[in-house]
Amino acid sequence: MTDSLTVSARAVPSQEWVLQQDADGVITGSLTDHLQGRHLRRTILGAERGDRIRFETLPELASGVSVAAGDPIGRRISALTARRQAELQGQLDVERAYLELARSGDKASLVREADVRLALAQAEAAQQRRTLVRQRSLFEHNLVAPADLELVEAAVEAADLRVRIAEAQLQTARTGGPEQELRWIEARIADLLSQLDQVRLDIEADVVRSPIDGRFLGGHGDTLAVVQDTTAWAAIMPVAWTDHLRLQPGLRVQLQWDAGLPPATGQLTRLKTEAFSAIDGRQFVAVVARLDSVDGALVPGLVGQCRIAADAQTWLDRLQRILAL
Image (cartoon, rainbow, N blue to C red; front, top):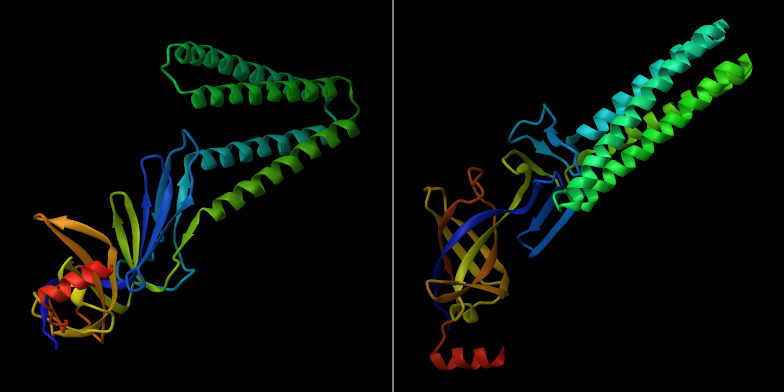
């Protein structure tokens, strides 16, 4: 014996991928398969402390454009990475100019140049040490986190390393022969080129790609982008805990949309009996139906009424089913 059960319903795409960024700049992707009942959330790109992160979608991606799995959606712009790239490129330009000077054989100019670079490195190291003194004072008063203090200590170590390099360059300029000086500069250039290559690889790795085929939607606020697979549709329905005992996968459903669109049909695929919520004191479970072919005007979030061809049930039947769970 069968009966019908009428509940509210909400249309959702079969799969939905949501790209989000938190306050720390960490970018995560959440992939939900409504038909299979799977939800996967993972960090796509982390963020370094003190970095400023922004995300840019590809300019050619307008809302509603179709994308394929693996297609780029956009890329993260890291302030630290951009600054690192600019600093390395600046150092490379200086070293190349220094190389031309060394090849000219003007030793006096080489010494003056090396002396200036040492003075600049020493000034930077002194500034970093003053910053470290302030940070240690703040740390002692619990005004900065240990990680912040560690960052400044690392900056001091890096500045001291640059001083030692500049001192060695000055010594080589004063006492070394032309060939030794040239080898020193060429080694520095090779190292800078290697570091720039790594930065470029990091920038390429900051590209975010869609994991599914679907329709691209722009983001808003913390949501950077959304991709929805609308080749198949599902309807999610809240069903009272006692009524869900009358349901089983395979039952046919009929939907009538509030927006006046043509009605849709489908069948139940999943009963989320493991996760229920209370509404107005009553317990509900989420029931999912896979829709048959639907009108092209169907949009995510559209609501309507769903009639389910459920089993008729007496109170004794309900009690037996509850005891059997």
